[in-house]
Amino acid sequence: MAGLVAGVLHAPLTAIFLIAELTGGYTLFIPLMIVASVSFGLSKYYIKHSLYTKRLALEGNLITHDKDQKILTLMDIDSVIEKNLIPVTAQMTLGELIDNAVVKSNRNVFPVIHPSTKMFEGVILLDNIRTIMFKHELYESVKVKDVMQSPPDIIRMEKDKMADIMDKFQRTNAWNLPVVREGVYVGFVSKSKLLTAYRKNLIYFST
Image (cartoon, rainbow, N blue to C red):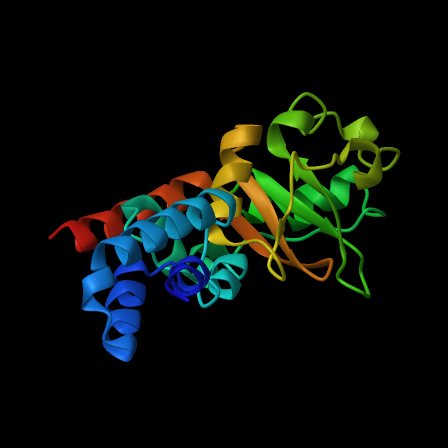
């Protein structure tokens, strides 16, 4: 029984004292310690989380003693989403892109969305059109769909936790990643804003 409690709950001390108290078997304290320790060790090796913490871990809401993981768990994705980018549509001409977005924005990223469903379709980077944006003869012939591209990755609000988002930035080496909810464009997250929020939380938990 002590082995079962220690293994399932990942609580060897609770198992030892609980069973000893229930049975009055303090003369078997050493065997209880051995059984509980072995059970806990094997269970921890094969099953990282206990029965009660497994669901929280799967949802990404488990606060641990790992400071990095704790900070990421407590960070809110909504606080780092930037929604001030000007969206464009794939059927816009180069001239419309420049007049309606480029000259009105201080950003170099422009999300491409479907005009009616608002589904995210791609992205325009200012660097990618810099060589043609001053060629007025191309303003009507070139469309956004001709120069748009897929982002290196997409942040999906319905399933990505903050740790997943950090991993995507690290893996893609991107500075900006789009955020969608069920495919619908929400905004962008920039690596600089994400790291700034992380540093603020790190300072808060370190003081």
